[in-house]
Length: 381
Image (tube, rainbow, N blue to C red):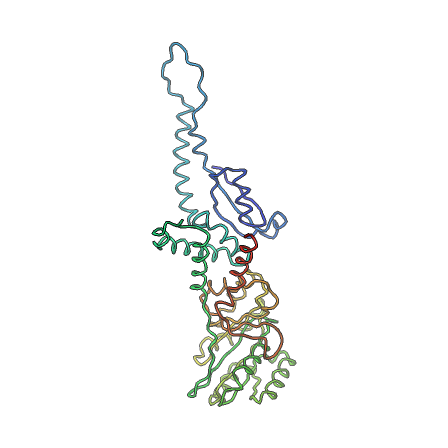
C-alpha cells in the first residue's frame, strides 16, 4: 500500500495532483490545515493512499513456449498471491476507516473544500458532508426524475439545508412584566463586552417600562467602571460596581423590580481562568442569569474554539460574536455554533453605539459562505 501526503492551497488542488501522480485509484484518506511548520508548502495537507492489488494481479510477461513444459508452482507467484489477499483485506479496512475520516464521495470535494477555506473546522465540515450525503441518499426524488444523485446543484442544496439545520440563532431578550431579565456577558479581554452591553442597554432598555440596571464586576480596571458609570447616567439607568459574588447577589436582589439587568464582567485571559472560578460558579448556578459568551469573530477557527471551550465553566447558553467588521468570512463562528450546539444571539458589527449591533439570523451567518460560492459559479459561467 502506498500512502502519500500532498500540500496544496486547496483540497481540490491536492486531489488533482494526486490523480496525476498516483492515478485514478488514489483514495482520499484525510485532510487538514497544514501545521505551522509546513505552511510554506501549502495551506492544506491532504493524505491519499493507493492499494497495489491491481498491479500485483497483472500477469507477468510469459516466455516463449517450449516443446515440453511441466506445470511448476512458482513460489514467487504464491507469495504474491498471499500478499495480494492481505492487501485486499487491508484495503477493506482502510475503506471502512476512510468512510469516517474523509468526504463520503468524490463529488463532495468541492463543497468540503469551500467550507474549510471559509474557516470551518475540518471535523464540522466532514460532519456536514456526511449529513448532506445521507440526505441525498434518502431523497428518492432526484432518482425518480432521472437526475444524477450527486450533481452540483443537489449537493449545494443539501449542504445549505444541513448548514441551516445545524446553526441556530436566538436574539430574544424582551423583558416581561413579572420578573427582571438578567443577562451576564463573559469573554476574553478586548472582545468588546462593555461596548456590547451598552448597545444592548440602549437597544432594549429604553423601551423597558420598569427600568434598567447596569452592574459591573470588572473593578480591576478603574477606567472601565467610570466608562460604564458615565453610560448609565446618560441612559438614565441604575449602576452598581461590585467586587465579590456576594456583592453581586445583593445587587441582583436590590434591583429585582427592574425590567432589565445587564452584568459586565472582567475579561479573562487563558492564564487567568483560575481567578474566574468563583464568579463562574455563581453565574452558572444563578437561575435568574442568562450568560452570553462574547468572542471576536476575527479569531482563527482553532483559537476561537479553544476560547469558547475554556469559558464553558460559566455555562453560557448563547454566543455573541463581535468584530464582525474585521473578518471576511463568518465560517468560524458558524462552525463553533454547530460544534457547541449553542445559538448565536447578537453580532457586533463595529464600535458605534448603539448602531453597530444586530440580532443574529441564519441568513446573515451563512451569507459569506454561500454567496461567495454563488459569485464564483456565476463568474465561471
